Structures are given as C-alpha cells and as structure tokens.
Image 1 (cartoon, helix red, strand yellow):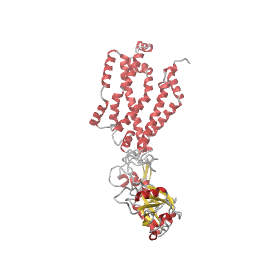
Image 2 (cartoon, helix red, strand yellow; image 1 turned 45 degrees about the vertical axis):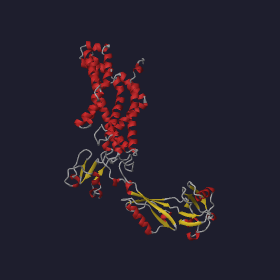
Image 3 (cartoon, one colour; image 1 turned 90 degrees about the horizontal axis):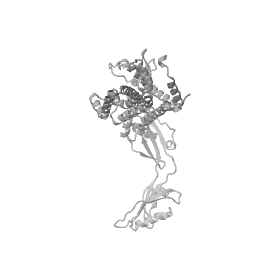
Image 4 (tube, one colour; image 1 turned 30 degrees about the horizontal axis):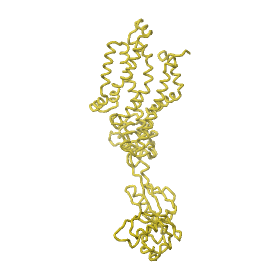
Length: 530
C-alpha cells in the first residue's frame, strides 16, 4: 500500500482540483465518454451481441463464425446477420433468435436504399387549378375573341361574349385603361396586372403582357384573366408500396369515382420506379392538379428514422462513425502524449542532470531533429510502408517529444543542485535512482500541466490530417474524414454539424480540465503556511 501513498502536497493539489467544479466534472464526463466509446461494439454494431441457433449459443461480437455455420452455403465468408435474421429460420417464431446492440448499424456497413423507410412512401398532393381565360378587345372595349375558360369570368357562354362590352362586366382601373390605350397607339408599355372583382362577384387577376412597338398598331389587345384562389387548401396523401393511403379521404378525394381513385393510386405506385408528370383531373367543372412526389434517396443522406445523424457519402451511419472516431482520436491522443512525454522526459532529464558535453550534444541533436520537415517525412514513410494507425503514431511520436524535453531539461538544471539531490549523492545513490526517485517527482508539474493541452493538440492534428487525406487509411472512422466529405457535398449539413460538435465538445472539456490542473498545480497556492 505504501507504493500508492500520496505525499501531502499531491493530496493538497487533488483537493484543490476538486474545488474547480467545472474541471472536475469535465474530467469525469470525458472518462464516461471515452469509456462508452471503448465499448462501441456493444452500442453501435451490425453484428449481434449474442444469438441462439439450432440449440447452440453464439457470440458473434467476440468470435468470427463463417456464413456456412448459419446458412449451409459452404462459404467461409463473413455472414450477413441481418439477412439471416430476416430468413425463415429466425422469423417462424422458433428457438432461433438474435440480440443486436441498441443502434444496430456499424461504422463500416453501407445502408441499403430499400431499408430506408423514407424511400418507401409517395406523397400525392391535390391542388385546385385556378381557371385562366383570355379576351381580345378593340379600342372601344368590345370583345372580339375569347379563349380557354373565359366564359367563367363572365358567367356566360363563350359564343355569346363576342361584341359585348368588357366594361359592362368589369370595372377597369386607370392602370389597365392606360395600358390598353398605349398598345393601340403602338407605344412601348410594361406588364400590368391587378386584382379585380366583376359585377357578378367573380374575383380574378387581370393582366396585360409587356408590349413593344411594331410596324402597325394592333387591331385588338389581349387581356388575361386568372382566377384568384378561393382559399381551398391542398390535400396531401401518403401512399406506401402496397398502394395503401395513410390519411383519411379529403373533400376532393371523396368526390372521385372508385375507378378514378384506382387510376391515381396506380400512378402513385409507378412513382416508386419512375418520375411522373402532374396530371389534371376535372371534378364538377373544377379542375385539380395531382402531383406525385417521392424523395429519391442518394448518399450522403439526411438524418432519418433509423439514422438520427444521417449517412455519409458511402451510406455509412454517421452516429456510429462519430462514436468509433471518438475512440480512435482519444486513443491516438493518449498514446501519442504518453509516448512523446516519456521520450521527452528521458531526454530532458539526461541533459539537465548530467549537463556539460551531454547537454551540449543533446541540444545540438534536438535542434537538428526539430529542423526535419515532419510532413515530408510522414508522406515518405506512408508511401513506403502504407498508411496505418501505428505508422501515424510513430511519425508523430518521433517529433512530438522535443517541446517537453526543453521543459524537463530546465527543471533538472534547476533541481540538480538542490540540497536533497546533493544529500542523495553523498549517500551513494545511483544516478538513475536520483533522477527518477528524487528529482523527477519534483519536476513533473509542467508535464502534468501540459498533458491536457497536449492531448487537445494531438486530437486536433489527427483530425486535420484526416481532413487533408494524410491521416488514417480509409475506411477508418474519423471526424476529419467526415468533414472532408462535407467539403465535397456542401449541402450535406449533417456531415459538418455533428463531427464539429463532437470535436468542439471534447476539446472544450479538455480545456476545462487543463485550466483546473494548471490552477491546482500552481505553486503560488502552496507558498503560504497552513
């Protein structure tokens, strides 16, 4: 137990760290987040945790079983557990069953379009079609020609409209009259449109199109009448692949004959496989426009029912890749910081303790090593050995120790002439024991203080290299790789939002922890007597 006994100063520092509630709870939140990412296979995975098949129990999440074990196909390839779970052997209600993780989608699994529920619906929209009619008038507003549904705007038969006076049915504003006059005078005139109400109470938009002078003045001028919508709302219906309509029949749908409903439903079913143009259907002299819409699924795909954070460009679940990416980023950061600090502490301790020629040669070597181009070295080694997690960790570690070695060298230069060191030398203790047993514990303050911030830098650099394409090899889950996809697909907002939030939260928590550690290890707090 004496090995784990803390000295009084360390206990004071830990008590002081607990007083910084923001740092203290940020630390434990990071521990929980990282712990959950370490058991990511139990949270997000397309492989069942446990399954029962023909009286035997299997643990696919731990052990590999070939496809032949469950299908008898004779293949030793990786089985498709979801397809096996949907087979008759598991759906008949027997003793065969599977237990998948809460989020049954792995970071390397590409979603099948037919499994996305959003792609199994067609939306039929029923819109009232406003009537449109045209009349050609003379300079005295006599109607000479009619077109389309002109009879609706006068409540008379089209044949009986000829030679009637327009102003007897519609009170025209001065803007329309000026526009008509300008056209008969063969003068340039802009587009004019205004909402009017006829003497019969019909409301419509009356418009004159833009006019440019011609060789001869026109004999007639055309006015276009467009019915103002009566406020009748559109009807929306959702149709599945079986032709079933989810909503209750609306007013328009109820007035259709059974035969017409069948035709429209059949057209909606065709929309699953092809694009259809809208059609117009007339019901009791009223025309309605039927529009068939379907969200055509393509990757990357927006957040959906089973994929709350969407899918990336390869159809992989973003939530799973963020969780696994968190594990890789934090593991990489911890390993890099531990290795680089170990090397840096050893290098700085040797230079600072022995001094003299050891210090001079060590400093010159460090300066030469720091001058090497890190990015070029990493690209060269990746091209020779191929990109991998261990190679990336090695390339970072051989350069990342330099900074901490300077701090440790300064600490050892300061402490090596202290009385307790001289006393240890007089007692005949070996140098290795003096360095690591007596001087190092008193010089660890800068190491512990810089640890959280070094971890932030390691995670940030890994994300940046993955974003640039020089990081981990595909298809390794990575936040930087998701952000790189977001640059290619700028409309896929979920590829920016969720990785950025994850990166921001993790870095912010580490900053809070770093501030707490720096304040807790501040030597000024222990210079007063208690």
